[in-house]
Image 1 (spheres, rainbow, N blue to C red):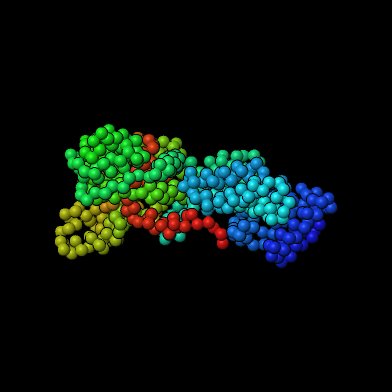
Image 2: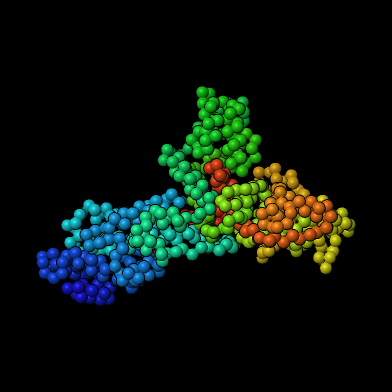
Length: 553
């Protein structure tokens, strides 16, 4: 009997109707007492169906859907001789519900469960549970059990890959993204579940361990809550709203901030609810906080820029947070015990030690025409009183035309020609300031001081030629020497006084990650939104739009 079933199923991948009819007869015969037991026949039939899928990476499910199988899923079944993992002869095993539930909870990580065919598995489960054990004597039901097993395996494998390496691909979007990704441990994770680990615990261990990721997950859950409550009010204002004014639009601003997810802003807006149309002092303070969180000059008035940010829908904010969660998954999980993160879009820098932020400061990044790249390296040198060797691009665009217009240009800017190249001497005019932090890379990008300190007071700070200017370079230099070198940080002052360039090699290089996030959760849970200064989020729109599309072929 078993040989006959195998021949029917493997004989040139016959039509599903023939397979189903053959299995139905075989199972009916077994149920009437002839041949092997019904339980044995069910198990063998499921195994035969699973074995048949190895002939093609795309299979057609009994319900009509198709499913593309990953190599890791096929390898998983080959490794267990095509025995089912999540179903048995009498129906789904307890682990099936746990795996299915874990896949459904992918939404908490900003990942769409439909990508992992959770909806299809839900329908199959519901059908099996509704029909009960009697239905399992039908060959089509056996096919449903085999389908469920494959759906759960493939779904969990895909989810694991996305959690470890990210769902979206910046390189595919045309972005120059130079960061090493981790390889998903797909060969081991399913075995861990089969050995008794809870799927949710396995998933938790696959998530990025950097604290920023968990903070962003919390932001996403808060936004889901606001969405469930109906989202937030749209503000319709024909002119700028400011303190002391009265208008229906003021009431809308107040309601919008109360409905938002920031507790401080909501509390301030609520305090004037007795006279909602009046733009009072408390509402102005709430608007200032909102502006500060959304990269707007915090003047306390509701103009075009503030209105635009207020009127982003809850769906748009959820999409932005989901994209930025995936950006964390693009990184290797182990960033080091201590490291520097520069967030280009947020014009900010953090030094993280054992998961705790020990320093933060504002930065200036490249203009849109000389965008700061995304990559990682390690800071190896602190240069005190640096020369500025003028890059070729700046030489051609700026310096050479200026020299042609003014023969005395080099002297006026404390510049000289050395080895055939123009450089600027150390001193107060030097474009790099007094400190330079080098992590050798192909882009010739580094962190440095600047004589243009006034730029740090701007909300948007894309002014450089690609390098990153730091707000408090002396503090940063002292920290590097204290933490990464055996040299006394106080020695910096003596070197500085000489006005001679000196390179200090760090005894322990410090990893630095130049990244791009338009949504950022702080340690206190406050979320900040930044403008897409280089259009790198927009470049991902095509993939983001396909996030909810099932992978079927």
